[in-house]
Image (tube, rainbow, N blue to C red):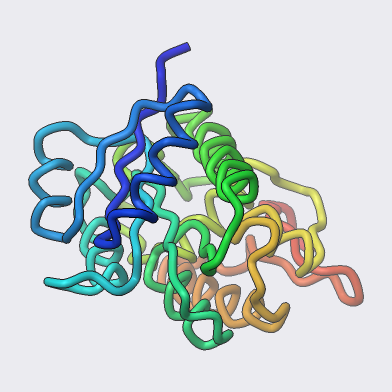
Length: 231
């Protein structure tokens, strides 16, 4: 199995070196930079398998970098974990809706961070296990990170894409809001369950243009499922 490469974007040198030391001991290849400019150059030189990015950086916020990475087709599949002292729920929601795959608040233990990294890498590997999924004309192409329908592209935000990807790789099963938070947003991410409903509505609205919103079905009292059958 190839060694996974992690890019750390953190301007506080002691924190950066502590993280890097722990990850190298765990078998990862690590690169370290202290600002967004250096991060962009590093990513352009060699795309990492995962990016750890601090929210507060000297030249641009880590949130802005995350959004930029998720907008770029060459880097939108690279998972991002935000590291920050901003622990308010609103900040966590901003980070996750900005495209972050997980959100870790400072101070954190090296063991917790390692567990979060491994969980995100597992989810990424599972999501990419099947490159193209076709559900009655609704096509998800994991390689290009696109969703196609009726000859057009379905415009989805990062969270809606991950949600649809999970649904399409786990069809016909009912998932509660709590299960979706755990499987799509990641364990130990403190986001209210109603957040799931918000993103379900956004996903349905995007699919409605092509007539595929019916595939995202509400199961009263239980949660949601993806099904091409009539509910």
